Image (cartoon, rainbow, N blue to C red):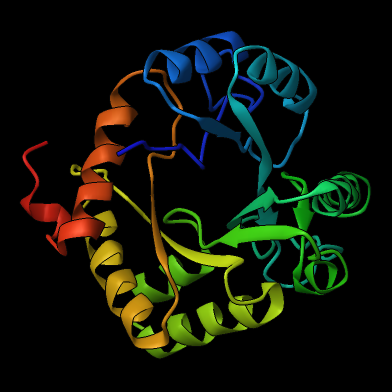
Length: 235
């Protein structure tokens, strides 16, 4: 069964990602992946280069961004309050979606920048068409509610995002990071939320490097298929 990485950071995720575009595309081709996403933190700097090189390599490029969502509105910039936005993964499914990603990212930098380029719920309501959304990593709003012990709020958040983006365009996300106990806790809760609400779950590697995350993402995929817990995997 083929696997496609949907949550991938390059060196354009400044001070965070390590992988160069050429390396990502070459590795995906080496592994026989039919497609690959690029979802850098808050920016779309690498998408043109990524698109051109992925197409040349015969790989379908999936264009996206891991957005920062301000908790109190993207124009609020209060010290100690608005410095920790939620993460949200956004993928363009068509030209309209790509243009909306450009719009969101532009506003995030011009109007919402406070330590990071930020958007908010109101902007997503305006520019969500043509976009697939996932709940992202441990910094996502669903995950944060789970870690705060508020499963009801996590479910309400997931349902709100599914209502906004539409059924089939919102997914809950699990990742395999066996040394992070919080990730195991979140994954288990996400499986339960997905089953109760009928929201599909996807496995990602949250790729920041070229090699090892491939194994972790494959383990997460197996967990979804077998209902095995991520804590039971060997890696």
